[in-house]
Length: 626
Image (tube, rainbow, N blue to C red; front, side, top):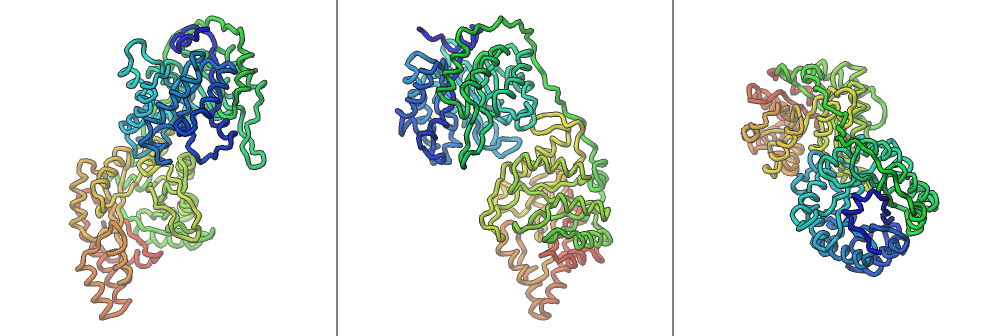
């Protein structure tokens, strides 16, 4: 029997069967999970080919190349990025040979595994280039179409679809190769980013997908609920490739427990709901495929009468709360009143008494806000979210919640930002954070799911009432977003680029590390004039000569001019440590006074070296207001 083309399958209104899992079967062959499965097309092509053939023999009409992670980004983790084209071409050849004209072959393309703008440093153009390397190799090898699958990020899948459309348009000499797209959902029927799945499928149709659907995610029941709704509004073929249920841990091994009979029942239900392409994902095997083929044998769906119309997202951005109404800090920024921020370090342990006393002292000294530092040097301290909420409730002075991307994934950060807004903590200082290389927990790992630019985009979206997936939150968060900016950065070109991206992402304010060279600051202000964020300038009272020399010679991005060091040395040599402390505080006061009147300088951010609040407050005493 001649197998119809994939284009014909898309239009013949019959139900067609995809294959099942590849990784599940490779793992069952004893291959370690830390091995690059995609490279097996070059290393063990017969093994991969046998799995393809087993699915064809079980009744699959469409098989996927073993290339889900064969993009240059993921392959780079195995040192194989330069073999991207060779691996994809080999995988396509193996699948085509195994299909032997009895099934069609689609080139499988998965996510890159990195964040792209606006939530990561990788640009859309770079991402398209990564996708294109894989897609071009698959197309050149002769696949019958492209399948973009298991995408969680709505923005990334749209970038991938744009790359796929470009790839097929540039290589088509006759009928354009079809592009099929599948996204993932959770048990709530939304994408992991909170986007309504049906709305996102409609968006992908608008962008040119030939068929859309769901795969992986959870078991078949949730996918059926979503696709039943999608079938009422979308006029392109729908796909469903669920996992064999949710994985369960059985003796330290993840097992998918949905039986072939259970999956077969749902294959029929998908078909009855109007789904045109059915298959399996994680945990499914050729036995599952065989039972699904039996369930679909002879099934001819009713001709669906669907009124073609584009489904538009119900989400729309809210008008952000005016800066002056978000917080006292926002009000001061809007009115251009001088701002004083004093850095406080939450104590180790859970007691709040000492921190609350420190906050009250700062308020009495004239501070506008106190900035609570997030886990300095990676040692265990109370979270800045909890500490900020306590300070606000018990003292009345506004906190700035210093918040690092380190050790948190994106969904955790999103929850924290929403929690902060709900608790009344309205001022955020978002930074990427340093890897946890210090402290007593040597085995601690860094997550860095997104960096400060990505998190600024997230927070800016929340200020428009939208989560990262575009879902409506009901009301915008009223937060002031501060970011870091370093006038003394070692790589100034990179620093200026990141400053621009933070400004474009929606930052309201930038806070600098300690600044001792005002000429360096003036140069930075001029270099960033196109993105005139107001600046809080870091002021650091050098309380010892050793501290001053450490800043000067061991902290990248902080430059202490030699004349200032000479003053500290003279004071220390002539009067001892106390004289050096007085001189360091005097220098900090002088620097603060010289900042008055400088363009874009909104105020100062006074550090408390090693938790020395007395030194920080001494900088504020008997000093001109700024």
